[in-house]
Amino acid sequence: MAFYPLQIAGLVLGFLGLVGTLATTLLPQWRVSAFVGSNIIVFERLWEGLWMNCIRQAKVTLQCKFYSSLLALPPVLEAARALMCVAVALSLVALLVGICGMRQVQCTGSNERTKAYLLGTSGVLFILTGIFILIPVSWTANIIIRDFHNPAIHVGQKRELGAALFLGWASTALLFIGGGLLCGFCCCNRKEQRHRYPNPGYRVPYTGKQKNVTMQRKTSTSYV
Image 1 (cartoon, rainbow, N blue to C red):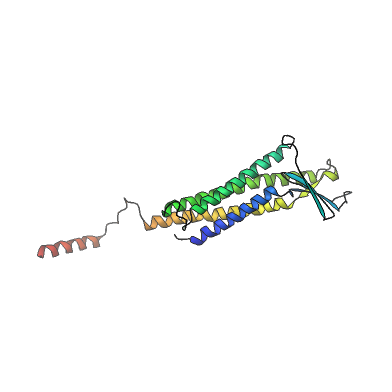
Image 2 (tube, rainbow, N blue to C red):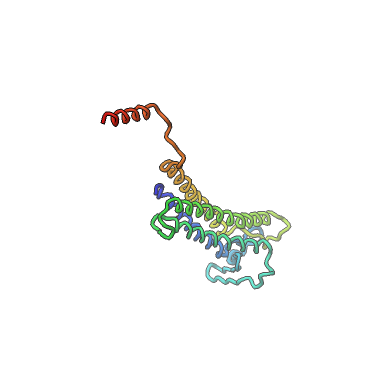
């Protein structure tokens, strides 16, 4: 199977994207406290994530608390939770499908066309996972920036972009690149197979040389 480094690179980037997606979902640093104006209490830092909020004091103690009520959460947080959980599940399925399409794995037989389709499906799922991550991460970042520049919101309630958002954007880029490589491998493999094995109805164009060769064969057989 040609273009073998493409599928290796695509699956490695997809695996890194899976790890980044899981870390983005679990980390509490989606929204962090902003030190602006009169809010100069720098020895206490507040982190807000999808599942918990944490208070870090003097870079020594860290206290985290899970959200007590599911129904009391804002709709934005509930939607971000759902999209990130779907993204984790999709990335895992995409990685498993891509592994089944590897040349060394024989769970789907030795048909190169089937393996190429599996790798292409894996690439599409990785790209779809990146879209599912990009929506809640960009949505949350937009809300944070909008509230930060809103003068009606108190300084103590303003937040800044956390490390989890940047990790989510990086994971999205890895998933897009890895999925693009796998989809490109699928397309290149299909073109190579078409060139190597033409359609059954394909006929070689007629030339005058073929006629001369046929006449020579007939004359030689008649003399015999």
